[in-house]
Image (cartoon, rainbow, N blue to C red; front, side):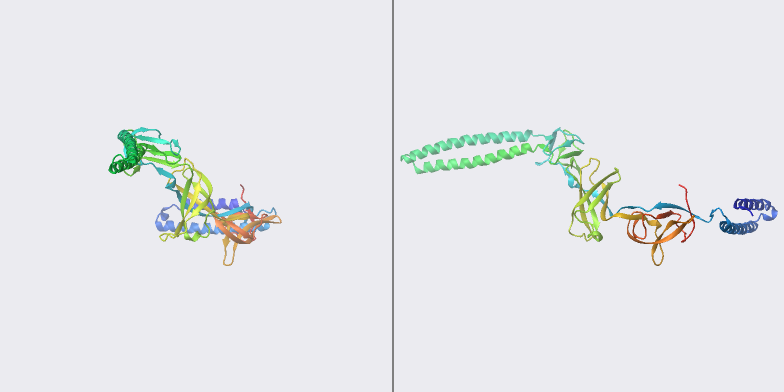
Length: 401
C-alpha cells in the first residue's frame, strides 16, 4: 500500500509530466489550455478523495494509536477571577481649574515681571507690577488734602468751643455760635469724604500690583515689560494659572445609564496620550437631562498632575458590575444553536483526547471576555483555538506551543 507521502509525490510528478508533455502545437489555443486545466482539476480532486479514504483506513487499522483525522487545537485551563463590567465613555479636563489673571482697576503698562512660564505660585503671590506714577501722585494729593481738612477742623472746633463759652457768659450773638457749630459739622463731613478718597487712591495704587488668585502653576505668560497688561491680548489670555488644588473631568452620560452611574460610582480614568491612568469616584451628577442629546453630566475629581492639560481628552470606565471568583472566557469560543449556547472542552477518554460539547449559561460581556454563570468548572480544558467545525466526540491533538 502506498504511503500518503508517496501518493503526494506521484500526484505532483504526474501533474508536472502532463503539463510539460502537453506543450505541443495542439495545446496552444485558449480552449486547449482550459480543457487541460479542467482535466488536471478532476485528477487532483480524485487524488484528494483517495487520500481522504486512505487516512480513514489508516486510522482504523493503525495499531499505534496515531489518528491522522484528529483536529489540531489549543487548550486553556478554566480559571476563576474577579470579573468586572464597565461603561466606556469619553470626557475632558474642564477649565474650572484654570485662572485667567486680569487687572482689577483697568489696563496698565508693565514695569516688572516676577514670574516666568512654568513657575509654581501661591495664592497672593506678586506676579506683575504696573506703572503707578500717576496713581501715586493722586494718593499724595489726597493725603495732603486730608491733612489740610484736619487742620481746618481742629481750628473750627477751637472757635466753636470759644464761641460757646462766650455765649454762656452772655457775650456775642446766637448767630455767631450757630455759625461756628455749622462750620465744624461741614468740615467733619468734608474730612470723612476726604478719608474715603484717600482709601480709593490707595486701593488704586495696590491694584497696580497683580497677584495670583489661586495656588498653582503659571501655565502661560504672554506679556513683557513695557507692554499694556489688560488680561487679554485679543482673544488670548496674557497670564493663565492652572490650579494645583485638584483636577476635574466632565463627561456626558447617556440617559440609558442614569440608574447605573451616580455619585460614588467607581471610575477608571486613562489618558492614552501621556500613558497615565487614575482611579476615582463620581463626585456629582447633574439632575437634569439635556434634551438635545438625552444625556447628563458626571463630574470626577482627580489629583493634580503637571502632565495633564485643560481640555485634554480622557477615557473613562465606569464600573457597574463586579463578580468575584467568576469564570470568564474569550467570547469567540462561545457558539450558539437554535436552543442554547455552548463551548467545546477537551476530555481524556482512555487513550484518546476528544472534544465534548458543554452547554453554558452566560452573564455579562466586557471587552473580549464573557462571564459564564454555569456549565464550566475549574477542572475543564477549554478549546480556544481550532474550535471551528468541531463536533462532539471528535479526536483532538494539542497544538505544540
